Image (spheres, rainbow, N blue to C red):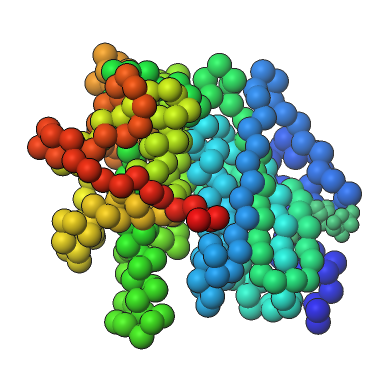
Amino acid sequence: MALGEFDLIARYFSRPSRRRDVLLGVGDDAALLAVPPGQALVAATDTLVEGQHFLPGTPAEAIGHQALAVNLSDLAAMGADPGWALLSLSLPQADEAWLEAFARGLYALADRSGIELVGGDTVRGPLVITVEVLGFVDPALALRRSGARAGDLLFVSGSPGEAGAGLEVLQAAARGGPAVAEGDRLVRRYRYAEPRLELGRALRGRGTSAMDVSDGLLGDLGKLCAASGVAARLDLDRLPVSPALSRRFDRTECERFILRGGDDYELLFTLPADRAAQALPSLHAACPVTCIGVMAPGAGVACLRAGAVVDVPPEGYDHFR
Ligand code: ADP
Ligand code: MG
């Protein structure tokens, strides 16, 4: 590497911490962090591999954003407040323009969400980015996948499906199809997913269960059902089809993106039916949410159209399939 490992870290990934609970950040053998009393530490990690999690040629700024966003989304799904992040970078070369843009994307989201980069590792190798995040939550209020009960109402945040559609728009362009328009909303939603941290906080003490949707709503809902030991009745007529989707795709395509598209990073969650109306204003203040069904005794996901069960095969994205 033209730029040495030490200089690279010093130039792009060291800056004075903005959090008082960082007793020691980047630069020593490890970070020293003060965990707030009474809170549980919430830990999550996610790895991005070029070609697998992002397309070759993705702007580095978007990769920096995505690497942190997918992790923050896990904290949001637990109802946690973000605290600290660690970054393991495997880079084919120390390309300064790439590093500058990557750090810009990562820090922009870090600053907005209040998380601080406190350490990491830097090696030469294929382009692989691993971020680990640490956050806090009162353990009595943490949101889990396992808390849904029969009768609870099922909700999804924001506009699922847009990111999956954005990925297809990019893939079509890569195959020689229509070029991607500057500022394309769907592509932006794919590259710059917004972790629903505010909503996660608003769900603390209100939601009975929550998870983030990364591998397609239908498959992920199946995981929530299995963890909770209940079934879901998903009302296809209630799926939130965003204007950006419906302008460009017919209803069947929109539904396919919403049910099976990945990379949404929306929250799927349940509320007790008798407390939903009271909770909704605070949830909506954080992020728009839509009731898309109800939990029921039994197992698995039943899809309904006009009140009748219809057959929808339930596969989502699986790395090993
Ligand atoms: P060690 O050999 O002790 O693991 P390193 O030379 O790998 O130390 O790292 C030096 C310091 O820089 C450590 O504090 C480490 O956490 C930090 N660091 C290394 N790479 C990164 C990175 N990509 N982002 C943030 N901090 C990093
Ligand atoms: Mg190291």
